[in-house]
Image (cartoon, rainbow, N blue to C red; front, side, top):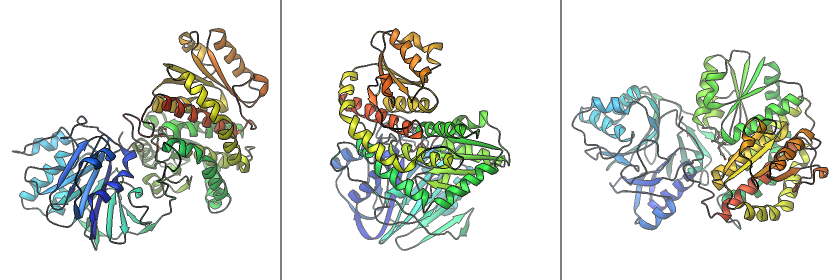
Amino acid sequence: MCGIVGMISQEEFTTIELLKALKRLEYRGYDSVGYATVEGILQKDTGEIDGFLKTVPEHRTRAAISHTRWATHGGVTKENAHPHAACGNLFFIVHNGIIENYERLRDQLHGHNYVSETDTEIIAHFIEEKIRNGLTVRESIETFIAEAKGTYAVLLLPRGEEKIYAFKKDSPLVLGIVPEGFVVSSDIYAFSDRSQKAIFFEDYEMAEVTATDYMFFKHGMPIAKEIKEFKVTYTEIKKDFPHYMIKEIHEQPAVAERLVTSLKTDQKHKLDRLSDLVRQARKVVFVAAGTSYHASLLGVHFFHETGVETQTIIASEFRNYVTCDEDTLVVAISQSGETMDVLKALKYAREQGARIASIVNVPYSTIQRMSELSLEILTGQEICVASTKTYTNQVIALLALAQKFGYDVNLDTISQRIKECIDTHEGQVKILARELRDCQDIYLIGRGLSYPVARESALKLKEIAYVHAEGMMGGELKHGTIALIEDGTPVVCLIPDEDYEMESNTREVQARGARAIIISNNSEFSPDFLLETSSDGKFAILATVVGQMLAYYIAKERGLPIDKPRNLAKSVTVE
Ligand code: F6R
């Protein structure tokens, strides 16, 4: 959470260009925004980048840092917005992460005047005090790294000196090599439209970057770093769509096809090796959060159908529920490849000797770099905070893996089926969304294949449409929650094929007055949405696409900020 971008260049650039690069990271948080230039110009405010751009004058500079915030310590105020400086204003700081021992560090310092409620400000005061005591900037940073507890990716810009210092632990940081100089940022998307060459920071590393050169250090010693070349399909333009979410929903046929092709060609070898790792393991555990967790639930179901037992656990609870050893394979599923809870779970698993594999979207992300093997889902950047196309491709990757164990699914028709599903049902979803515009609660029920769909669609409804939604196992509803069903309560019932138990659950809620909305591929159940598909993983994908569209159009009816819902951020890099 929080996006940081520093730019340093042999040629002048404008602060507007800096903010445009920062905007590509805005999905990481949008509570406040700010920048500082090497000349000492500091601008910051609450709110989003577009609004900020309208209020700040344009400056030309050759070195500057910027920040888009997802608040952790301290409310959403101008004072708490980054960059921060210390008393002497020697330099500016931007930070992504949390300094856990900031109070203890503050107690060590004397005579400092704090102007914000953030944990970040201590970094500036701490380093400034060390410089005052005679250390160089680099030595001061090393001292900070040695004493700080928590997570951080930090950029430090000295006033009047065209140089950026960058250092990190646990939070992501990358140095992009662009034609005129360098970009240091939370992820590659800040510069991936200009360059596909980058150096990825590992924990405790620091870089000193000028417009023409860079040097990396670890524990005070210079280190050599490898330049990596990466590929991303960059999609910034909304074109004919009013929101990225609906654009990304419509991109699903294309990205699905790209992945299916790649799994048969470029990534075939990796898929084979991943299936070997699954075969070799005594225990296979998926780990993920949010939407990616729902994809992993489907993965467990697909494997179960082939007779291979796997399990999945929400990343933040991994340590409390799972034990690992050398015979355990942990497969992380993550769009960003940076989710802190997943990273922590992987570190724990690795300490216990487990092997690590992953399914990620962002190339060279930390989770990918921690994995002995990583499949890429190749959706390109997903800009809407809510995941849609990346979920679909995670499910496709899991289907392809389960297919290696005998799961019966035709991957070649997925793309076409998604397209037909959108074309056939979008109009009808819009009508339903109008009807449900003012509803307070929606329940969604499924079993087996359709249970993860119920949960994923509920998550979309909560985060985008701000509707209280619960995705449940059809069999579990009557063990309590059914008490909440009243006349007219909408209940989305997901009934694959001949799932007569799900049909009974549907009748049960209808008998209590619920407005059942049936999604099925079996016309016998007179579904509201008849999906043209067999009852394999494709059903789960198509039913979720209907859920995505429903969340989108209810949110649109309500006039909500769909691409940037309140309180959320796309890349959750704090625990
Ligand atoms: C919901 C959503 C989140 C993410 C979750 C995990 O639409 O996007 O629930 O799925 O934060 O993120 P990744 O997949 O990046 O690990």
